[in-house]
Length: 118
Image (cartoon, rainbow, N blue to C red; front, side, top):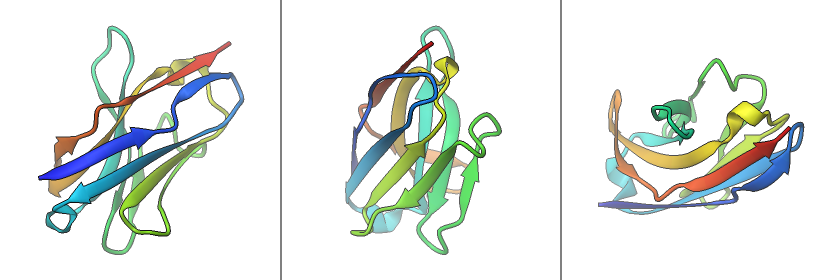
């Protein structure tokens, strides 16, 4: 099992920045990497960004490229999502997830709310 705990959400104005954190524990060695997803009210959950343990390869959704950055923390079992130039459409619950196999995320955190006001 892998446990994921997100933090760092909040209410900000458009154009502001936030940094989300995800602390991973448990059998993290069984995973390929971590990612962030988000779900806005009335919408399906969507991929935001992901990073691999090996080589720190990253991937991003087109909607956040150039504004969001995913990175590993110094301790190694923490992943950050730096979100700059936030827009109202970024408002959602953001979830951290662990990738066990290519193409699938099998462990999920409880989510943290991000609200961007216009």
